Length: 358
Image 1 (cartoon, helix red, strand yellow):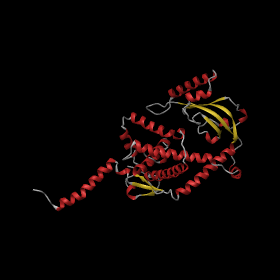
Image 2: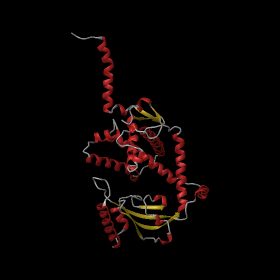
Image 3: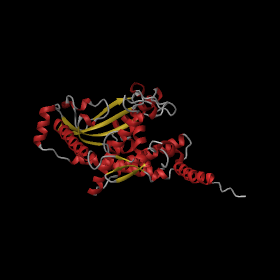
Image 4: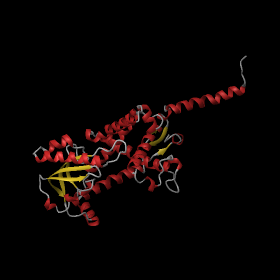
């Protein structure tokens, strides 16, 4: 005998859609379509939002690894269960910062599309580097691609949509740098800047640079005595080849790990701020001691790097070069800030935002 109880029928009407919704949410399918936010009338799905959130989070953890305790961040707790300050949790802080990156990415990416800008392989190299790093981590922890992206970037994340959003972000910041590089300040602006800020009295330098890096210990991830010894031997072998007359440009192509310079190891009109590693002060102090064509070394075994460089001559006035760069950055940042306060403001979608960061 069939049970046609109105109560059971009502229960099925309520439960079946809920069960289906749970199944769809667990599959990640819905997260790929539900809007978490809109920027410049373009929808950003929960999956896309999660990319920026977790990308920001992991970058923060990596850069701040040694300072987490002093910053008040506890890796044993989820971001939503610990306070960043009196008014927000760490989750809310990461959401706030990742939305800035998301909006900035949208703005500069759209500018690059409108300009028909063609990206070089060098500008896009970070994409493959990050995918390769992910693959190495999968191998290390015996994870499938599906499980890796779900675990690290939330429901619905796949290598395909991760690559797509990463490529967009890399293109956006490459185009931002392009805009800074091509911006030309008026002479009056530069003079005004130097009057207000100074800048030192030195020439920028043109150099060809070869970098060597220590391989960190696989288990500890640290650089110990054996890694420093190995790096020192590598450097001595390289120095011997240079002393024997080997072509320095060919050595760069064969052995440089590319920590500084372009793909050929060249740095043109380099200023103090361009040298993002310690130990290069000698290039800008007592510059009369520099000899064109001479080979110089910057050795820091403890931090795991060695730079061998050839001095190729002086560039323009270093202070003016630095002023031009800072003014260009300021100009591009101001235009970006104006856009992010207008069309490129992040407009959150209430339902989608309940699903983000999961």
